[in-house]
Image (cartoon, rainbow, N blue to C red):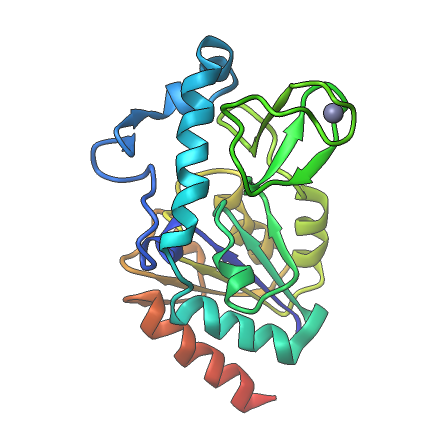
Amino acid sequence: MRIVVLTGAGVSAESGVPTFRDADGLWEGHRVEDVATPEGYDADPGLVHAFYDARRAALADVAPNPAHLALGRLEAVLGHDLTIVTQNVDDLHERGGAHHVLHMHGELLSAWCRACGHRFRWEGTLADRPACPGCGVSELRPDIVWFGEMPYEMDRISAAIAEADLFVSIGTSGAVYPAAGFVIEARARGIRSLEINLEPSEGTHWFDEARHGKAGDLVPRWVDEVLGRL
Ligand SMILES: [Zn+2]
């Protein structure tokens, strides 16, 4: 049984992580244009660094919820037959016991050097412009995929979907491409699909089955069903 799970903001939101898809269109009081685009970074790198430094520090205040923990349990049994793809930039899947997570929108705990191109695990701050551990130049930026940039791991994600028996989307609005297109890709290949979301997503009609409610309730139940069938 090969499964691809896509997770989105809804899963992190249940752990109390603020997201930028909230009703006012702001992310912790900032316009996404200012803090989540390359243009915003070029215009005011200090503001952008301070913003992500705060988000990185705030990871200490949140914990994985039952949905993260259930996916960790599933990975422990399925191993590489489970591919977790996330749009989230926090580390809650990893702290929930999953070790092979494709972060298509980057990670708060990673820094990317604009001088040498290398990426480094990063737990500290960037606003103080630290030197790159690789090349020594002070050009580290948050390793976050901003609007207008290409998501990571698209080839691996497509390959995993092509080999999957089931595609499951959890806590995503179904509004942000390319992730919103994964279910269409699965459908075109005849792969079964399941949506788990607080409410019907914009793409809910593409799924073979949809379950609506809290991920923290529904994901552990679904994982138990899968494990019970093995
Ligand atoms: Zn460097």
